[in-house]
Structure formats: C-alpha cells, structure tokens
Image (cartoon, rainbow, N blue to C red; front, side, top):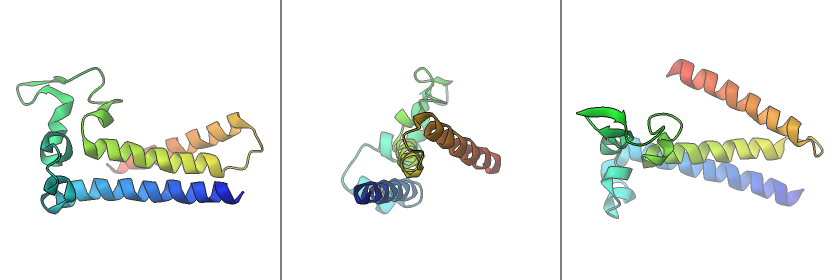
Length: 126
C-alpha cells in the first residue's frame, strides 16, 4: 500500500513538472533553459512550434501528417507533448487511486468519466 502511495505522489509530481514545462515554454521561453541549452526552437519555442502541425504555414494549411492538427498534435511541439504527459500522469494517478478490488472495467470507466468531465469544461471554457 505504501509503495502505491509513493507512485501516486510521483505521478502527481511528474504532472506538476510537465505543467511547469508548458508554462515555461508559453510565458518564459526567452529566459528558459530550453532556449539557453540551444534546444530546437522549431519544436520548443511556442512562437514557432505551433506551425509544425501544418504542411507549410501559411501557404498550405493542410495537416503536416495524418491527424497532426487533432489527435496527434502532441507529436508536433513540446507544449502539446508536455500537456499530454501531464494528463497521462494525472489520469494514471486517478486510475491507481480508485479502489475497485481488481475490477479493471470499473476503474477504466471511472477514468473515462473523469476524462470526459475534465474535457467538457476545458473545451467549454477555451
């Protein structure tokens, strides 16, 4: 039981780390370690990386690759990738914290319910 609690804390800590990456990229790119270390601006700089989902912005606004503007957008830039990793950590923590005594289907349905309710408000406000 104690090791499960440590895993939950670790997942929540990772979620916080990925949230910090997202916020740093969005609001502090110019002074961030990502820029200082010379990491690819095309992937890490949100002022440029958002164009990666398009074939050739602004001339060609089609997808750069299949689902690059929707389901696979997390592969196009660091901001979206860190968002995906943050959400995976949070929903994994929810999954592990549900005491369903081995009922995998119940746990999966509970995570889906959390995911749907999270996204309903996230996209309604955005």
